[in-house]
Structures are given as structure tokens and as C-alpha cells.
Amino acid sequence: MGKYLDYKKVEDLFNEDVSVLEISKQLNKSYGTIYSHLSRKGLLKSNRIKLDLDLLKKLAKEGLSCAEISRKTGYKEISVYHSLKRNNIEFHNGNVNHVKQLSDIQKNVLIGSLYGDFSLNSSTINSRVSGIHCLEQEEYLLWKLSFFNNIDTTIYYHNPKPDKRTNKVYKGIGFTSEYNSCFNEFKEMYESGNKEITYNLLSKYYNDLSLAIHFMDDGSKTKSSYSLATNCFNNISLKIYQRYLKNKFNIETNIWKSSNVLYIKAKSRFTFEKIISPYIHKSMQYKLITSPCKIG
Image (cartoon, rainbow, N blue to C red; front, side):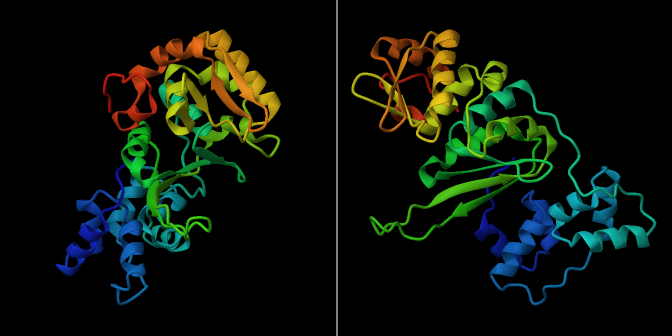
């Protein structure tokens, strides 16, 4: 997962008569991403893309399916298929991404993020992950995504309509990952239709790093300790989570019944800080009562 696209750089290069393919190589972004931006800006004279046969050969040789080549290049999948077929190029005619593997640390980061600001789209055979952070947390989001360099991801700026209450626009930065079966075991969180906390996933993957990321996503400091905005979880999930925090980390908590917000008891504050402090990103230190060492 790379950094976001520098739109101005793309337009400057294009205005210098650099080709779309060359721009994609220079900026290490897919042909389709560059082409789509230039098309949206009205800088391309034609919506028709001439397929780069050498590029298709290269990607097919790497074992990418027609669907994967389509997503990387911006070419229509059917056009990719016919071009490869017509030129007698061997290829994998699948419509799903090749299976990728997540390491333990990736799963640690993922579960903490999914209980926080990330979400899982599991409406198809395979799943994908997405999320949005406020623009001030851009560095933090990119740090989280840096753990997933083997996963194809699209990063974008989010410009919503003005908030009706304040008439302000709260800009953000978001991402969507590729669909891949490596995320499917996390579908368990959504079996009821709503996001839930399950002991099975907690016991497998939720560790110190997960807790730190969960806190950086949804945590706040209070007068004497900390809280987690667990509002979206039902009572059963929260009871499972409370027991896990106590048994795994010796952290005692309370749930504010009117809001389902989880509070770290004051007597567990220092235990909580000791566990998460080594992982707190430098841009998120403001959330801690006691300043940790800088990381990230």
C-alpha cells in the first residue's frame, strides 16, 4: 500500500507531454489510476485506451488474472481477455484476485483497525477492507497501511457535503483494498449483519499492538483515565471484550449504559498506558495523558 496520488504532479507531467504509461511508471501507480484522474479533469481527448501489449504480456507472465490486469491498468476486462487471446499469450482467466497471505502482525493491525475505524465489505465471495480518517490523521492512516504492502489499495481524498449542524466540511482521507480471500476469516465479525466482537478472533489476533491501534482509532483520555468509543457494539460483544481485557491484559473497565462507551478504570490506567505506549504513533500522542516515546 503506497502513498496517495499527487494529482498536481500527474497533471504537470501530462502537460509536459509525458505519456500516461510513463507517468504511471514514474509515480509507481497503476495506468488506470493515472488515466482515470486525467479523464475526470478533462485532459484526455479520447476515452478510448490503446492497449499496451508489452504491459499485458508482463502482467500475464506475473500470473495476474484478466480481472487483476484490468484493475491495474484501467483497461476493460473483456478487452484484456481478447487482446491476450488474440496474441496467443498465456494467461490466467480468473475473475478474482490470487490468494494472498496475511502475516500475524498484519492480522494484529487489522483486527485493531476493524474494531476501530476500518470496515469489512463481505457482500461477495471475497472481502475487502476500507476506511476513512480525518485529514489531520493522514500520516497515521498511511502508517497503518504501510503494514500491508502486499495488498493492492486505492487511497483517495474524501470531500463530503457540509455538516448540517455546523455547515463545515470535514475533509478526510480514505482507502479501499482489493477483494481477497485473505480477509474472509474476519467475516465472522458481521455474521449478524452488524459488527460484533467475538472471542474467537480476539483470542487469535488481538494483542498489545491491536489494543494500541484500537485506542488510536476510537480512544480518548478522560479526567483520570481513558475511554473507547465502543458505541456500535451490542451488550454481548462488550461483555466478551471486557472479560478479554481483564484476562489478557489485567485491565478493568466499566460500560456507560446510556452510550455503550467503555471506560478504563482509573486503577488500570497505568497498566493500559504501559501496554499501548510503545506502539503509539507520534501523531497520536496527544491522546495520552502520559507522553510515550515517539514512534512512526
